[in-house]
Length: 252
Image (cartoon, rainbow, N blue to C red; front, side):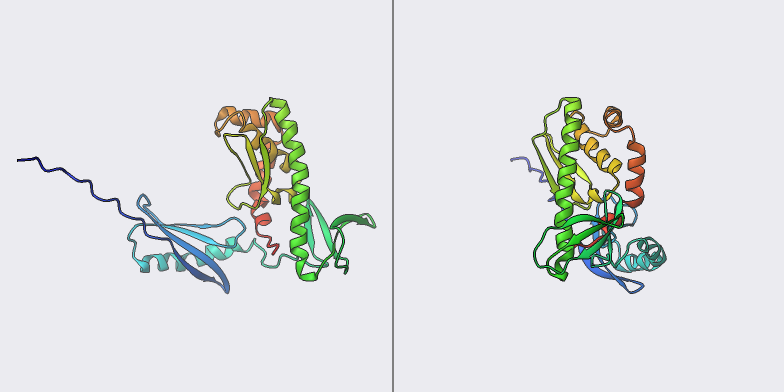
C-alpha cells in the first residue's frame, strides 16, 4: 500500500479591495477598503494630497462594523480634511508657490508664449499663455522643468561629494513618496518639491543621493544625509507640516 501524500491547502485568494465614495459633510471622497489577514484593527488613512481615503480592515469583518467605524470618525475626517483646499486657485489672479515664494498667476491672453517669471513692482508674477482652461497644465509643465534643473544640479553636486555615480534622473508625480533611488543608481523625484523652499529641495536631493551609498534608513544613512545637508531636520519638519498641501494641488 502506498502512503497517502499530504497536500497543502490552497492559499486563499485575497479578496479584491472594495471601492466606494464616502460623503464627508458634502465632500465626496473616494474610499478603498482592503481586507488583510494580519490586521487586528481598523485603520483609516488620508492619502497624500487629501483627495482619497484608504482603509484596512481584518479579513471577514462585517460591513456594519466598517460603516459604524466610518460614522464614528466623520468628525476626525472633517477636521483633517479641512487643511486641504478644494479650490486650487490655478487661474488668473490666483497664486502658486515656486521655491517657497508665492507667485501671482497672470494669464497673458495670448495663445502662444513661454511660461515665465517676471517681477512687477518688486513682486514675482508667473505669466502663463495659452487657453484659460489649460493654465493648470502649463503651470505643471513649467514646474517640472524648473524642478529638473534644480534637482539635476543638486544631485550632481552631492554625488560628486561622496563620489557616487548617478545613472539617470527622472521627474514623476508620485503621492506616496518624494523620491526614490534604485540599486542601479537611478534617481526619481516628485517635481512638486520645487514648490518648497530651496533648503527642502536640497534635502530631497541629498536624501536620494545618500541612498547611492546606503540603501537603507539606518544610522549610517542618516549620518551621511546630514553631512550632505546640515539643515536636514528643519527640511524634514517642513515636509511633514506642508508636504500634503503640495500634493493637494490639482493641475488638471
